[in-house]
Length: 548
Image (cartoon, rainbow, N blue to C red; front, side, top):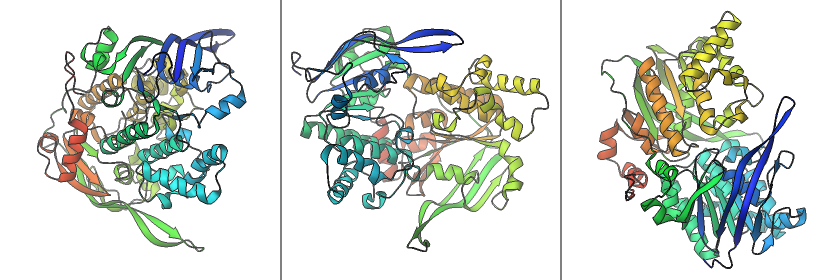
């Protein structure tokens, strides 16, 4: 990097947000006097926990913060010598998506649910490149192939809700790369991706950097990604950059206490031992979840997407089964099929009673005993309901509280058990960090005192230290209540810290099943070996003792 001529030069940047509490208006400092620069073709990582100011910094660069509540008390943002702070609409329109592109953290919230994949990517090409429809379509297919999306031509007419989390993230990356920008802002670009696809996309971004000379601002909580990708690191906490330097130096000789704390944070421990005689809570034989493919004017069924194709498993009281595999392999469909939330075929037994033949009215009383925590807590928690209303909704549905006081006490107990203040029941989801929202989602399931909880990627969007806290919380709740978990995740380190047994899936089928230590230490199948190598083949950080 040429320090005298950086591509991006940020100096003394501050961001405040106006908040209102009754009649009182306060200003909260989100970013405090930070400075950094990025050279042509260089990757700089912003690292820190949720709420540290990373994403606010990134949004400031493109002037995307809401002007009604956010302001910049001071600072300068120079892009190739041109001031972006306070720039007009015409200049920013020529910059956004063209010279500086951004991959947002939550693709389901960033993609338009009413537009197809083709339309969403095509808008960028039409706006900046003025491409004709046929040329744009070919470019879109090329981009989808580039980011590893299978059957790209078939995906053109697909809507975001029809894609898995990892597939949606790949569409976001394709959109960002459409105009071959000078600089890419990547806000947690691999959060929703399994380890093998993560490795492919990181290699892709590296290759694009080399071919296009593209700079990158990488925002992530994943230190493995930082070590692989970044030339320099800026460590943020409470809105300030507390340490910055060359990546290898930061990892080998962290100077600040907070940096050392980050490097040491990762899920630890093992699953709670469970008796072999423990009662079986749920069991399935040859479960299938097939989605029909309808084509033609009459929308006749011409085939099926075999999301789950002949899976058998059982989970006992106090026992955790980890389900792993690449995006789109059927993990989430398996969980939804077990709970009869999507149509499935095959025998399903819950507490010794067959539930596969029950109608919705017959299965409803059992819903309180088998709960689910979804992958994205921000999307699964209603923004219009308070935390108390969200957690207490199940109590009303199942008539578990006879008085308002009893309902309030049960909600307070559930919030306390997941480490939240009972007084937070009056607040709303947007007022909490990602880790706190996940605790709310766990409390919503826990308040009904279930016997089984299916956890669908509950730590995927969380930084490493919060992941460790959630794993410890789940382990503690399991010990106290004898809960059975089916833990769906692409993060094998988290699975190893929590699960007794592991089911490896690929293309809707079971590849391997066994005790966690046996599968991790001695995988039999080549696909399982590839997963393990991608997830666990790390170097040890000198002086920190952390697997990276």
